[in-house]
Every structure is written in C-alpha cells, then in structure tokens.
Image 1: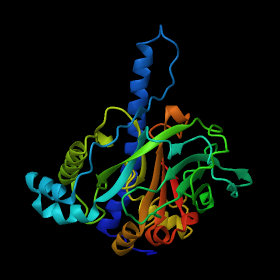
Image 2 (image 1 turned 60 degrees about the horizontal axis):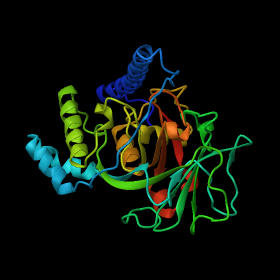
Image 3 (image 1 turned 45 degrees about the vertical axis):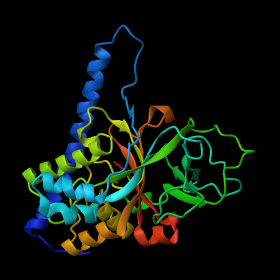
Length: 331
C-alpha cells in the first residue's frame, strides 16, 4: 500500500469516509427520532420496539443494460451510459415467500458438516440460499450457501482480528428432510427476484455534489423501473436482504476496506489509511458483494440502528468456490 499520497484526491477520499460515517449516524438518528415520535403518539397502546424494519418488496422484473443506457440519455447524461453499464451488477433481492428451498433463520438442514466457530463459540446460523434455478453467474450452479455470523458479538469487521466472525459454506444436495426446520433464530422462507443495481457512487472519477445527486436520481429511476424503491430515498428502513449485486449503504468503499483489512490494516486504528487511485480501482474490481443481511423483525435480528451485514468476497475466490475466504462488515 502507498505510504504517501497527500494529494487532493487522497484528501477527498478521507473526507468522503468521514462524511459517510457521519451520514450513517444522522440517518440512524433520523429514524430513531421517527420511532420516538410514533411511540409518543401511541402512548395508550402496547409498548413498541424502538426499531421498525419494513419488509422489502420483490422486483416486478429486472431492467436491462439497454434500458439503463436509455435512462442516461433521457437524463441528459449520455456520456455516463458506458460507465453505468460497466458498473451495473445483477443481484437478487431475498424477500418473504417462495417454495421453501431458501430461508433465513431456522436450521441449516445440511446433514453432517462441521459447525463453524469463532473465538471458541459457535456462530449463529443466518440462512440457507438455494442456487439451483438462478440465472448463470459466478455462483455454483447447484447446491446452497449457508451463512453463519457471530450475531451475539456483531464485530464491525474493521479489524483483522474480526476475520472468521462470518463464514459461508457451500453444500450440495437438497435440505435434509429428517432434520428440524425450526431452531435458533425464527424461520423465514425467502425467494429471489433479480434486480439490476448500480453503486451509490462510481469509484473513479469522483463526482461533485450536483453530479452525485444526478447519479442518485438515475439509480432511483432504475429501481422504479423494476417496481421497487431505492433504499436511500425510502421513508423507512427495509429488511432488504441480497445475494450479489451492489450493497444498500451510505458506506461506500467497502471493497477497499476489505482489501486493507485482508492485508492486516486495522481500520479502527487507521480509519483514513491512504490508497492510490490504482489500488482503489483494483480493490473495486477484485471484491464483490456476496450477501447482504438487514435488521429484520421476523428474524428477531437487530444489528444496530440502520446497520446491515455485508459479506464480501474476491471475484477469483467466488469463481473458484472458496467461500471460506469471505470478509464481513456491519455498517
């Protein structure tokens, strides 16, 4: 990693990280204030929880790259068309319902396997996502992904010591019918719906404030074309779970953070660790979102106000099925 780099771009990268953290805190405060207002208005009712995630909706259909290009033209940003198309990623919303082949909570029903531990304590099971029937991607064509995380401790992922707090296992075959469905966290069946997604901001070149607002409006139109809301513009926090695609977060740059932590950088001690433009572009190209899990009342899962679990993996590890090398952040 670079040790110098006190240039204008490095300064703005550091400023953006600080602004991102501040935005998360403001958003958490806003939503907590909304909850307080609702509770005050309902004093005669039973006590309500302080956090009210709303179930996310599935897409009605996935948008195409050609549609995205036309949206850039209509917005008067035709010069963005190629960049937007290159950055777009198809992922899957995991929303309530389905045939029961995929679920969050419950038990793995995976037969005999070694339950992952971290710090001598078994990790909590968060879900099983069936892969058969999904459109072709870098994921295995069949089997399922099992997700485990240290929910009781919920480490941020900012420290190299946090590695191992999240584990993903790929298992073959159908769920074991002779194993219980319920156990641990509540069981919630989910079904995937494809969605074309864009990042909250392109890594390079950096956009100014007006351009960033136009980019956000483009993402908002893209979401609307698929029958859903852009999470950043939604009035409520949604229990929005994802497989692949881009994350729903103000905390941009997690790809770079994942690379830094994997190289031994403690982001709590060095929150503004400097990287060159080349290193930033390389990290953005090499790391991709594998899974996103949000606070969810139905799962009795609360990672903290406005927080989500983001599970990242290097693209070459994804292609090779090396799911034991993921890194997770809670943000």
